[in-house]
Amino acid sequence: MKSTGIIRSIDGLGRIVLPKELRTSFSITTDTPLEIFTEGDTILLRKYQPVGCCDFCGELTDGMLHFRGKNICPACRAALNKL
Image (cartoon, rainbow, N blue to C red; front, side, top):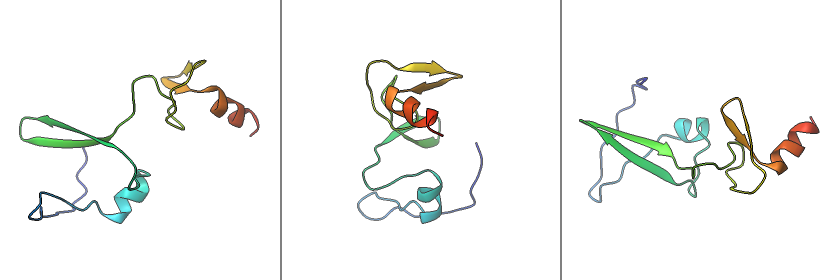
């Protein structure tokens, strides 16, 4: 795990603010669901994606292709073929 050097306090309602740089780097918007994990004294946030969904668009459809550890839906495959 890599340290960012960023320190944030929790407000009275238990919220923290993720810095803009991190939200931008990880493509996190106000609609992005985050999954919360704990291990010992560590809290980990990760973008939530259902198992088997497309690693590009997040959709869960029929016809998924598993390629080099990534799931790719038919629509994203078609878009990639146009590149």
